[in-house]
Image (cartoon, rainbow, N blue to C red; front, top):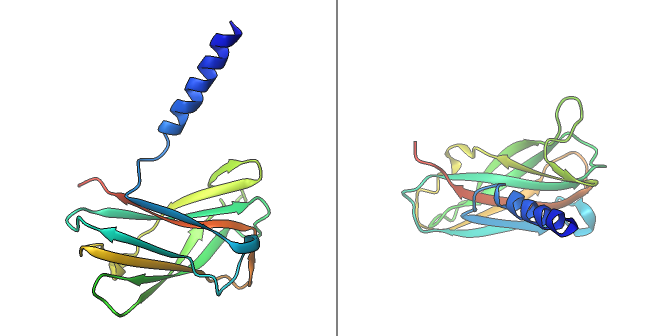
Length: 161
């Protein structure tokens, strides 16, 4: 009887991992040195688009501790598109907590991870095949920004409308 219960738990745990998010086209996360994000540390994400006819949805992934002192995260996004020498710059605000202070992301113990869909506006539509580069810089008033563990970028192919 105990074996059956353990087997059921293992199967449920395995299946719950399969039911989370669709497979990404690209995903990478960078650890933040000493869990304190300095203005000078700009994680760079490079990825190749080979199907410019498809639509893509970009996401930012923020992993922080329960002790993160703010309910949001302002970032500068630096975007270099294929064939361009000019780097476009956008400022985005990532909401990490509800107005009542409850974290919006998934939590495990004292660590939370928020995956936020972002509209980069007309800056980048991934409408050209080639290498794209996206760099992220924290833009809060505090430097270094404490209790940030990882920052990431994820790209999913979007469903056709």
